[in-house]
Length: 256
Image (cartoon, rainbow, N blue to C red; front, side):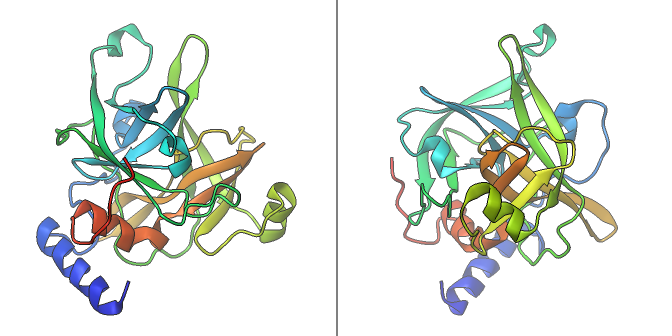
């Protein structure tokens, strides 16, 4: 995308959202809660005929996930809110069908590069404490430390949320683990707790301080993992692609 196109997109989004910092000005700022669903209200559970994945709500009608999650799926259902197997929560979530799936045209199954996708939901989401978008920062984010990985844990009898601390790993560790050299658009991170990194589409999040508030900002989307080491695709690399689709200001065709 040219510099002129980028400036045009940025002007549109600022006018549209009334915010100079984020894709959606109503995204999550830091309000500690003992209820995990209110602490991570952007988390989406994506159910497809042959696989389930995580995703992140980024505005009223779009969820971001991996291309590998939905690339070969004809149908996907997105669950938002208090979605798990606890009896008291069974009626406290909302369910959406997916109208269109946008996968990155350069997605590479072998290297996991550009493994990102946007899901257009069948209608706008109503925001509340347990359903709110994660922040998409329009500017640069420095110092990728104090990261948290948000994902679903799935057992035979229960679906529940997991939150793990993560840290950026050295290039050699990642090359030794995955057998590939990651690109600039990718992040290699490891769970400090030693938890297994197995869920595509899960979010890597950092709290950033703007105007005295801490905003929960999406850094990456998990593509692949081995043991406690994970490959994420870096959100900052795809800002123009995201804006073009969400604001409908570029000629990008859905693949479904």
